[in-house]
Length: 350
Ligand code: CA
Image (cartoon, rainbow, N blue to C red):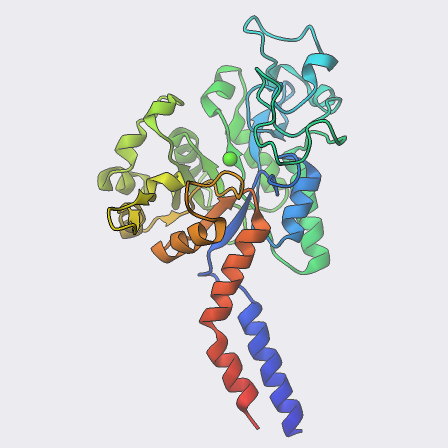
């Protein structure tokens, strides 16, 4: 009996060490495991799930008939064969807008690895070949069904982390983007603060509306860009100040800044140069989920694991990454370094 009890204790301790706690940083699969398979495809999401990601991230835009689909751009030519399939459907600017196509039409497209629309070159040359594969557009509902279906068979509780893209553009096109997305989330039971669904946007307006008009309990994350990017008519510089962060805390639960706003490089002594952003955000109760960690697009002189280790040391609460497997490995290693004492104690019992 004593041996059995000891084995049980070891099993318990091992289980406890492997079980993620609410305080552990989350790994957010940026557009799926997009470092390995074309972004926003069902296979990229399934791979991210299998790699141990905590959340699967879709960017969302709308089809002409009001379906939320997982795509990053307002236009289709960088990730699909739209020019060949629908040659006469470009607007006067020569671009093919997602919102001009019905879902049935979007499903006819071959989705491929991201290229530069102007040159045809792959954005990330070492990734999955843009010439290969027969991938299709994925709706928000399809991504949710994949996630919930896998959760049911694995017993895990992987979440989704949808981004509302170009809300003002969609409103101008006559769509109530926020209401459309909320209808889908409601239908699949994402309602409470612990439902494993976080909503993000670069625009404050839809987040404020979600908090006030929709009175949602879902966690909201304000993405932070740069004024130089000239998007959304938002003054991001103001948002990075302590006053700006306090204002964000009035409607959101976290921020998603670029990594370069936390780690700016190295100082004169060769040590990492860290801004006060994480500290300032924490001071007003905001979580910090920086973007985007890519193994094949790192700042000079630092590797993936070192960079993530530094960010975790600074106190980030999650990371958007194209390579979820490598981020999961870093987080798990830190967990096991933190918790070996209890496991050793249990195995030392007679
Ligand atoms: Ca995104």
